[in-house]
Image (cartoon, rainbow, N blue to C red; front, side, top):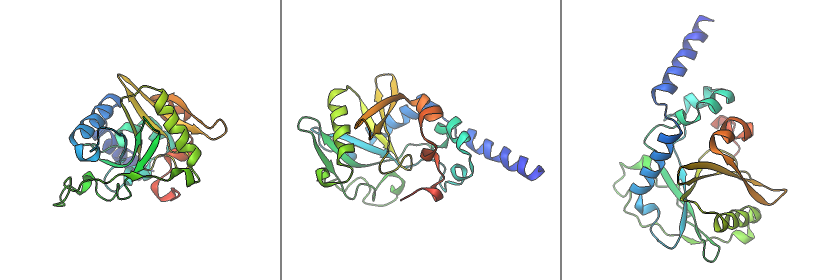
Length: 212
């Protein structure tokens, strides 16, 4: 019992030692996006970057935490600075989806590599109309075409391939949009409400229990 209490205390200390709140998390994302200009090379496209560094370096804190702890201390699981990759981009004028198939192969945690940030990203038209998830992408494109926003991004390991939420920043607002297959549309949630209440437990599985 004593060892359990000690381990719990160490876990909480490790979380709060790097803890950040919503405002610092959003500010960290904006700073990372501004610095990683090579991730969004074309002004004509709207990019959907992915935050890659959820949890500590070896994910041990995330894997040990309960779902309740993950909900309560969600922003504290991100080890600053925010690290981004980018796979998808959208032309909101014509509704085309683009992708970089190598978008996750070279991202911020590999900065020690000599080619980091020097390889020009190549976005190609994505044949999403032939994908099983085509309705999902059509609904996302429609939402982004009809709603004003500053940034839209994903978080690696949050959600799954059929229910990956998108995180949206607009001025001082931070919210989540999640796909509803029944309505074939995205629903909006306040980010804090989504994390603490609305998100399904599956969003907070340990990485060992995630479906790939």
